[in-house]
Length: 340
Ligand code: SF4
Image 1 (tube, rainbow, N blue to C red):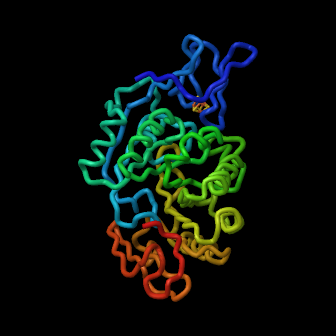
Image 2: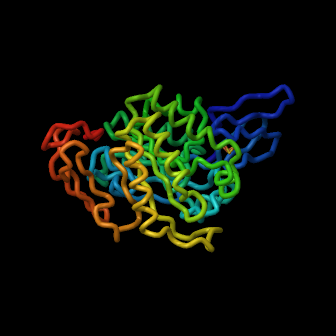
Image 3: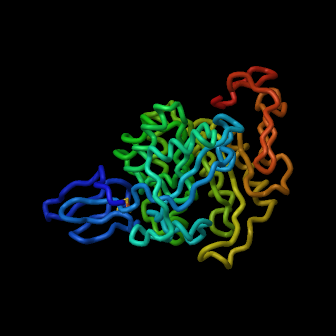
């Protein structure tokens, strides 16, 4: 369904600039934005994916992955079509490479219905995930407002490339910001994603942290052999998190599987993932998790950084809370940055 968008401005040339994400596309009449979900029609920009759902599923929150917010709760997850990135390694390329010109892959679920489904399936939260929510602002915002009225928590699973204006609109209704910090290397973002100014991802994440401290943040790095797996790169990401988000911010280093256009790169070796965890811990992070690699024992468990006891045990999306008291270690009382 077409919906007039919230963040655009008219330029002196008569063209319109979309301010929804950091691409800030300039659109003349009839032109689509980079994400191919927004179009300039009769002097306004319209989103063509409002209410268009490609995927919907009640997931465990751990699948996002989010480990430090209401562990073991279920989160109704919605995805649409399109993306403002073009990751050559995208694991959901069938929906993210699709466009708002081709809605055959989508069904219509309006915000009211989305919240109703969430309640009916006994989920405590709503996530916008599977593809990029920052191109879907009008829908995520309307749904988030309704969700908050029903005491349902909300989560963006994002590449971090929204604009600050976008963040300011959604933040009052957002509980979790699950962001991909894909690399600290220009070449990675330029060649694998077609993004020139990757610094905007980091600036935005810090902006969320500083301006909206009540939003819970978790970060993910998908470790891709020969592209972002160097010690130097992983160390830079981990040190950035410690310095800007704090040492108690969870960092998930996940295993890459060949997909989309990056089929000639092998899966991440398990040793690389263990090394990445070590690098994160050495940088000062207290909660580093290894994702998509069940062969690594303990990769997803939470240990108290103070008394070293096992606090939450996870395996194949099954979560067992061993000892937790109001988000603190149930054994020694250490703050674990867990919202319950
Ligand atoms: S949301 Fe789409 S149209 Fe708008 S700036 Fe981003 S890529 Fe361009």
